Length: 509
Image (cartoon, rainbow, N blue to C red; front, side):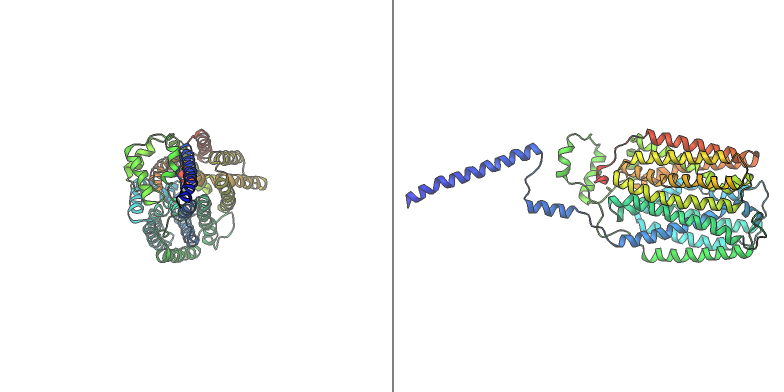
């Protein structure tokens, strides 16, 4: 018996030695690789736990949001898209363009404090509350606007008040576009979702610009002398108010704040440990925020407005993109008042409406194509350079065409120019917005949008004042406005080309 035990001992010792050797080998490998020993079953479970779940309801959320996005431009584009006809209908003088253009200018000085209010609402009460506020303001504003259809100057100001109420509600929707994608959709879906939202806004613009002009001019004697009628204006404003109210009720009843679990989780310490040695040191405030991400397993850490602003200040690449976005917004002003700018070349409101249809349709097509490439290739800067430069060349072509009066050939070539402008310039705003999101993480999108909207507002206010002064003082105003916008497009392209930034691995993965 003792001999058997003695004979078994060497075998047991050899097994123990083998186990120790294999364990030491694993230990050496784990030390060299910078990783821990995790059983295979546990590793598979961990990966399964870290895989974010995407809910089918997110598509219903997107449908509701898209309907709300259609509402905004439908209600607010009427004044700017047919400014000359509005002046005739309300019996305003030929030098009183400012009374029409001020409808969009009036809310600009209040955009920054309004953006603060919107940011506060989103951070403290959530996405749904912001949508509710938008729905209520646009519904109320549409019915006030309906009261001012008598066609007198005094009734214009009633309609104007309703228009301003609706404009005040717009930031409560526009500031949430990025947040919807972050709360409900996966990484590879977000740019596509932004394009869908842009397309929905484009559809609203088509309705507000083209259908409104055709419906409100019912009874005009000829296409060369278009005039708004009380009948057509009543039909359009009543239909608009009913549509806005129905969509607003759908948002109030069915729009949900967020899914049960977020679509993206922060990386674990195990994933971060090998690269953490080469990462730049974070401040105490930033590291605390990053730890909160790991604890909450949410997309963005809990943070204050000051944390976001301090972080943005240290990001030169964000300010490059901010300049590009602001200049693009200012340059787009000439397209928003296109009917006023090209009437001196014998173009009608219908011609301007058709150009806007081309712009919207091809802008939507371009948004889908470039968003797909944007998501799949992750070549953010290259794709945005291509879209911004190509769109600017299309706008340059249109500016050259406006040196001649309208004829059939010029009308066709102007349409071709707008095909290029729409296809390439249409997706540029959403691509730039996505770039800012990837570059500025962990800053919350509401903070980023607050700063972005503030600078956009300043540029748009200055551009609107500039255009109104020109229209009131010189007959060369249309030409000057077009070429000033061309210069802004060129400057924006250079800023995009010069942008250098690091994209967040948390969002990319």
